[in-house]
Length: 203
Image (cartoon, one colour):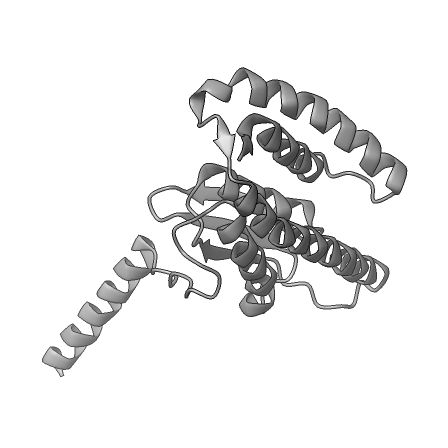
């Protein structure tokens, strides 16, 4: 076993990189990581009494590959999204269909939700607009909302890794919650059905 607060401090330093949106150069990454480490260690030490004193070395070793995969996947999405947005900027004729996509989440801890929400916002072309706590759903604005699966696919991969990293109840590969129809949509469907029934009875 090892003390938990230094591990928490390192995790906060990594989270700092996501929140800051660091330029992808070795020097800037190192500089921001050291700043995040300084801030993260201070916060983790100050709040160390709120969680257990020790963390399992075995669990840390098990989580490390998932954290690395999360980071690599995020960097890949960051690169490809930058290229895509640049293409759209240089070719105004390319179709742009902005839209908002509902993303019901499997992760439930605040830190996991925040990490995924920030990863979405830091990826060019997408923005986390809101979070509904009652349904555990993110609302994501995309520069091209015509293909929902293309938007959801990287988010689901991040979730698979986050489920392990943050020791969530669900496991990678577990099915994602289905998008529930909004109240407005349900009211519209009810009104439409009533109108149809009324038309048939008069007919």
